[in-house]
Length: 429
Length: 106
Ligand SMILES: Cc1cc2nc3c(=O)[nH]c(=O)nc-3n(C[C@H](O)[C@H](O)[C@H](O)COP(=O)(O)OP(=O)(O)OC[C@H]3O[C@@H](n4cnc5c(N)ncnc54)[C@H](O)[C@@H]3O)c2cc1C
Ligand code: FES
Image (cartoon, rainbow over all chains, first blue to last red; front, side, top):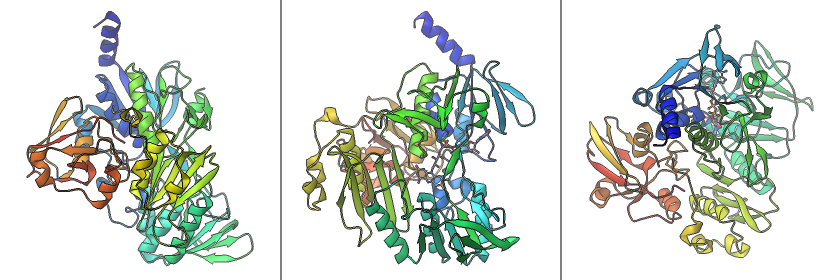
């Protein structure tokens, strides 16, 4: 060990990492810090009254009551014991980068050597008359689900505001419970921000087949009801009856405490390719962070578990003195009814799509997004094979023969470059 | 108490004692075993929990499902006993289970 390494190791023993926010990014960070050899203290502070849990099931199995919260914990309680991670339930009100301190809600201050902001995002609220009525819900955390579940026994007609992934998953979960569901979407198709029109068409058809009423291109002017919601007023004057309203119109990143402390924010907290913010010894990861994506050539703030996990790994490495760039291919998934969607890559900037399957029939489809002839992303519904193919094809910057790609008899493996040096590199730490 | 052994591609051995029934992926992530990511939380959606079951345990663990097959056969490191760890239910009766990890997760 060189003298430099010795002092770094000594610092790692006596130093304290404070992680603010106890969600997906921080659960990964706890594991990765120990795997990277961090021997010092790790203090995890979150404002939800439980250990980090999986959020994706909230709109999927959890809403339907199939799983209990302790089944959703990302890591079991004894993981935190064994890894010597101290947990505190508290809300952090402010940061002082100069003094290297954070301040909690009741005024207590805590010192840090390294600080990681894993603050996540909060649901965008409807700002309309009646938005505060009983029976109107947002969907981000376990407490939201408990509140929705409490309203479910009396719910006959639900209105979902927003036809994005969370809205559509919620619609599917409620249909599975036998509730009548109307989805209101301002754009002229569902999933407009994230998929090609062909994929929207596919999902609109399936939801209609499942009995969901879709109203596209509609504006909302108010939520009506006497104490409890009874309907949603549309811009054209129509009233859609509802005894349960769930709003899924996107999220707002939790950046305020960073912003107030002078840490640079551009939509998300600005991080470099290894998760460092503009302030010394302060890092950020997950939904609250904005990073530079090399493939897209621009700053992005993603909202997904794989993104939170990848950034947390880079932060853990950076804290322990190792450079590990944020580089993994973004991906996402969504479950609705029996449809398992897996998305590889980001489709922004695509020039054409190539379909494998027919959006007008059936329950499966693969949609490849191409730019300059190369596959940059793919939406794969009940087609895990195409999903895994796409991950490799995107990494290889494959420019496939489009006829072969569409042809269901093609063995996709034959399109890939099989030399081992082109295998996707996933950092394993 | 039962033991599971994970052997990394470079030969590093992680021996994990556990007393919970759960998936092999959960046991790995609960014990901070590197190389098993489990990004999707066990939905068989991400393919980041690929393991290769050693021959002596392959019969007990059983074959992969159709969905796993479709995910795994795209991996250049797929072998006859490859499984997605999140789809392998481990009970305390499977004491001594041993699996290898691929060089890369997809
Ligand atoms: C219903 C739903 C379904 C989803 N489905 C999918 C899916 O299928 N696939 C997918 O990849 N992603 C999905 N996502 C997105 C995914 O859950 C998020 O991208 C992920 O949780 C981001 O992790 P994070 O650690 O950045 O933030 P979070 O997991 O949100 O954690 C942040 C935590 O910080 C806490 N916090 C914030 N401010 C403070 C403070 N000042 N003091 C203390 N604590 C604070 C918050 O309360 C929260 O507990 C879904 C999200 C929702 C809500
Ligand atoms: S944890 Fe995602 S496939 Fe196993």
